[in-house]
Length: 348
Image 1 (tube, rainbow, N blue to C red):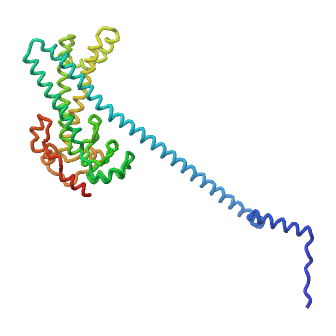
Image 2 (image 1 turned 45 degrees about the horizontal axis):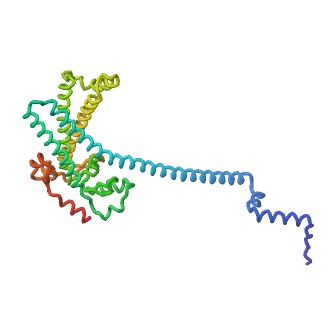
Image 3 (image 1 turned 60 degrees about the vertical axis):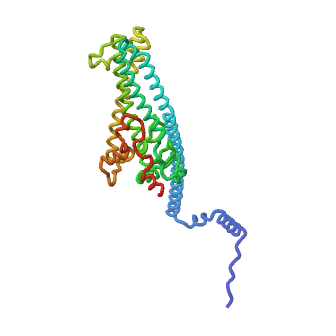
């Protein structure tokens, strides 16, 4: 049986088939587009648009994350710069205020208030020197015996940008990482900018006594300052509202030339002594309550309760020692510098 032969395609048909083959190789989707329905083409376009949209969202998220990290690093750097600046300025402010208080007492207050009363002059001189000696002595002891560092092996791992999770881990284990001191501190209460170091269980007793005697010195200076202004400038403090109007009136009188710069400076110092005295007294009361509860300021801030709380007498004895009466009148050691907790933490 003879087979039928198909007619060979013409030259035009061969050219058309060749062109379609080239287009198919360059763009494979064109062949599918020729045979696909309009619905399928629209679905492919929607998928392409969805992919482009997802890529755009991902790129935006990456850019936002990089911007947020850069802003966070800048904020952290600015915050640490402010803290370091405050850590350097606060001790200088303390020493300047101390020197000014010394000069005012021995050059103005005591000689003017008690000109012919040698016994009273000697008594007030002794009282002032006693208060200043204890304030400065406990200040030096707070710096000399800083809060104890915990396991030194973990200190180099941390930095000024230590995360809150790491800090929370230390806090739960009775430790706290200080970004300024760059140390993990045992029983850390807070960082004092006036002393430039952390306050912990080791120097808490000196810090509390420093606050007590600083408050007493400021309030005592306030009393002598009021007496000096009364004697020298005839300013009456019988009215309870005098302190509310003294500073604004003195400022206005100074700019009108009614009073001297010394009188305005003394009025300013009265407010400085009043403010520092009240702040130190309030802070001291708060610290004593925390010590009696066996809690630190860091733990109270984060709402962490003290487990296995000891009696308040034992907590006070742990900080003030057995010779606490001697510590009330002299800046000397009243407790052991080492503790069992230190050894226990170093073995972690």
